[in-house]
Structure formats: structure tokens, C-alpha cells
Amino acid sequence: MARRKISNSQAICITLLWGILCYFVLEYSAKIDFYVIFSLVASGIIVFVPLYKNFKHRQDNN
Image 1: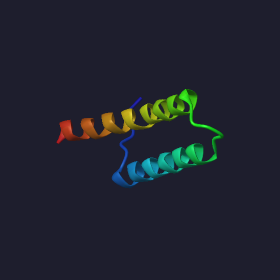
Image 2: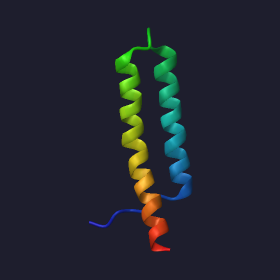
Image 3: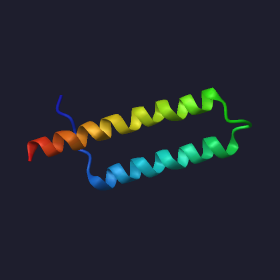
Image 4: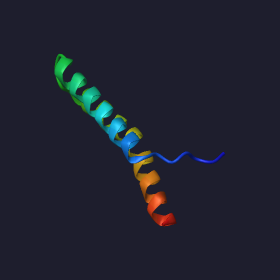
């Protein structure tokens, strides 16, 4: 199955949505402990590794 390419506007939208999610998690958590930090780091990895791979693959093809 061929992978879809992510455009710059889609990457910006994904990044902004992730940032808003992180803001809400930090703002409304009772206290910031290991589990909150771990969930933010894990979600960052899940979001940004595919974006990085997509942009790296796009640069390699040009």
C-alpha cells in the first residue's frame, strides 16, 4: 500500500492540534507527575516521527 504524502498545511495543522492537546493536558491536570510527562512525550513521538519520516522521504526523492 502506497503511503500518502503529507502537505505542509497538514503538518502544521497536526502540530497545532497536538500543541493544543498538550496545553489542555497540562492546564487541567491536578498535578504534573511522571505519567503526564510520559504521555506527552509518547504522544509527541507518535505524532512527530511519521511527520519526520514523511519530510525526510520527500527530500530524498527530490
